[in-house]
Length: 479
Image (cartoon, rainbow, N blue to C red; front, side):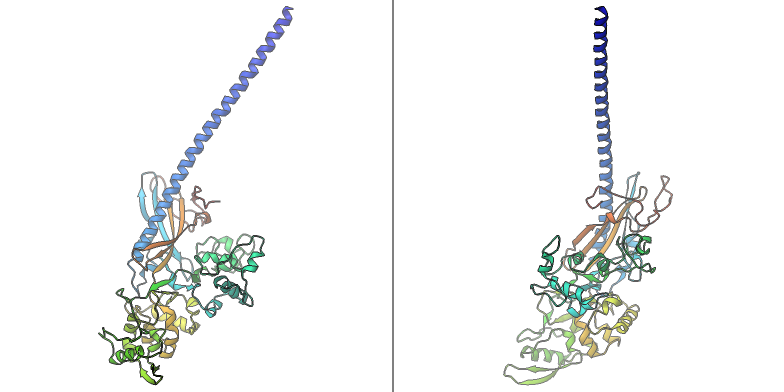
């Protein structure tokens, strides 16, 4: 009996011991859980703080770009590459980390430059003619027709196009615009406009040929391994270019098609032109662009049906003044004109009447012209690059104003390598300057190596290649 009681007591003690062990284990798990949660919250807080600091550094670069955009005048191109203003700028040093930013854009000749890219140097897809769109590199008829169907307001497909019926039949159908694009990335919604067509081989949008962009099909993206970066359509097109229909002083231009027009300000204008404007105002004729008047004699039809030939009175000497002060359009804004001072040869060749030889001549001539000479489109005629007939054909598509600018900014910690990358489009057409597009590209990786500082303030090894360093994963764009 005594033995049985001892056994029962021992059994109870063993049960209590097991219970104590279970409680201790549970308490340990709770403690570990609390420690992990505290550590996670601490890490998240640090990461979030770093992410916000990287964002703030990058936005400092965007704000500097906005300040420069407000200062730009026609003919000025110093904003295209200004490393002293845009490269490795120090924002803040708190003793632990030094935050910097660098603003950069793609160089048409390859690689990057430390400056802005003007949207007026590109073809505006929302206003381009069929001929201009079809002349873009690699644009087959099926791509041209699909894009124009995507933009037009009807539901009738072109011969090789696609309207809503095609998109409704997709595994994941969606509504098409049937109207202007809001961003160039929306090209990816158009049938046939794959990432290879739009982005080319530059998958990480850093304007540089990276190893994975020159290895064939070994790694993404697919490429031709020819040692050159194929940039796709993105550097050539825009949806943002526009300028107010005003003169250099910001005054509304005089519309040549105003009924009963009579000039009140004739300072500097040839008498023959003043007489021409009066005759035009009394006629039923229409002038679409003042460039049409260069060395021209127009047959004006009066209201009684009679016609007479009237010389415009405009030659080389007065061309720039007339282009600045007069218009043939009633719109408040002129949309989609291409800047003859900044557009690449590839974009200039999209203008009806400009071939490769003329595009190269324009690029060569503009390098040696001072800004004041480049301030008016008239220079391509005054400098004898084109005769009057050719000028009348191409000038209505051209401008020397750039008022919308695109840039990329990387904000980074010079000691930790943490970074954020932003892409922005700035509109300086009206005051104050506006930010009309902002996108976080951090998920694509570091665009180029950055030199890091050691704890002693001395330079340490830079990040080895684009995609190196430490991106901030707190934002929604991180995978």
